Length: 502
Image (cartoon, rainbow, N blue to C red; front, side, top):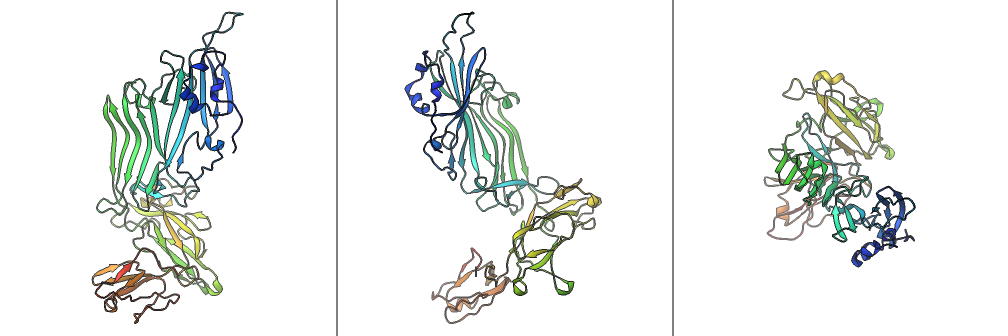
């Protein structure tokens, strides 16, 4: 967008009086270039009010800011403003109104957004029933820029003049929309957007929600006053900050440490709530009770072998081959749910139901899904539900709604990729054992031939073969290989970061 013609915000001040001359040159240079995009004006017995939006500098200089890691109001998007000019009072009939003196410009600076690097949006799941509180990555990722996490700050820049203190510049809390002179003070508000996120590719995560920094000794936000503090209070308050540990954390498993409704300041010290929650889903529940069956000629069915790399967690995999002529296979999912599917060690808790969503988007609650085709790039999603065996007959609409007295476990994602051997298939998964130590998902071996001969290879999934020759074996599709690189006296070296792609 090109720069638009318009007036400066300072042009709204009465030019025929001394008000316009009260503003220091430094402030004029900073805000005098801001062009008004839209303008609304109202008049009351006490004020002349001007409201509107100031044009962003990115529009002035025609900058593309969609991929910026820093988004600043006034630079990447427009700034809402309000100018209040106090009237000296209604004049007697037939006389001219006196000159205004007091004026206030409020420029809303929100939201200042700084992208937090190395994190991805997530959502809290569990925390009720038998499911511990954890964070789960949002799948599929939302479109940009919602696939990023920002630290967001907001405040109001107030420029006022005409009083005994001269022209002043302050950062204040959101002003009263009806009373420009209502008390306010130096308040900064922070939050994360979205409020929950995972760190890098790990299962560590955080929730940061609604931080308030009060730097004023004459004003306190209403939500803090409601907790028994007066306008002299200064400090930090926040709604929630939570740190999440991975579900695989030893001993405590899904550990989360939360501080909620916290107030730290003076006077008043510290008040709030600290919550520590830990636990573990039953090992054989949330990601189990599933069987995938493939339709055969003549109407028979066979069970499809699982190719998930352990530990399965919330993701399971069933690699599929193509049928005759490259046709996809017909498969369906079966869930072992019902009043009789008791959780081991319990007589009053069973896996009583399920919600599933097929790769084509169909949803349901039946223990057996309709047939669908695989391999596919889409995924099957499901959430098991637990409760007293008597609740197995409870229903709800739509299928994603949880019936009364049932608790839903975490969501599990099941993929059906093309098995190794196809032009776009996945490679085999091979483990290597050296002595008593086993290395998972090995891609490459190198070292002296005598030491390589002591390595035991095991095929975990896919199709592969290998041989130990006198030199580098030629590449053959559908086969793994072991190469010998001369390095006398060295232990075989293993590469294990990724799967072998063929």
